[in-house]
Length: 165
Image (tube, rainbow, N blue to C red; front, side, top):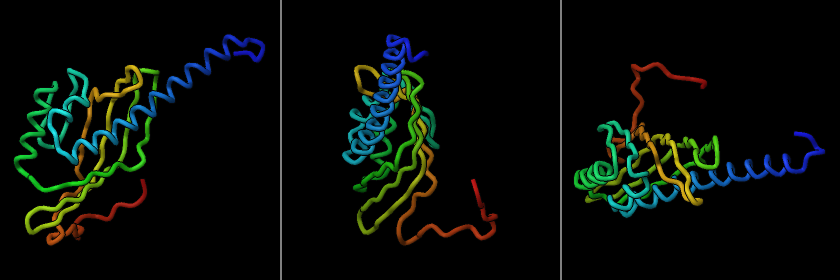
């Protein structure tokens, strides 16, 4: 691109703005997902995915909105505690105005009958952006810790201490 070519400069800026808007939409999707988990409403959660979206968890891989909604219904039946989810500063990279990758940490707190809990982990997602709104093409959830406050989260003293990246 040359400074003497205003059309090329405009095209470049237009593409950059579109990519930034895709990044913003993907970041907003992470927050919409956390809010939907707090309700929780399996159908609302499933609609955050494209029709043939994929959810990958330690409990299995689920394809399409029907399987994804069924997963969230089963998860709610196993644990009816009231939870709040928090998304921590998503790193979002748009490859175009329509595609963005998202990685972030999450945390959650919960309260059930006679117990309080907390946990954290990571989300990694491929997002499709249409008309300014992002949906998950694929969401991978990795829970690192999920515990109640009585059990806590002691470090396994037999495991080596990891340092650095």
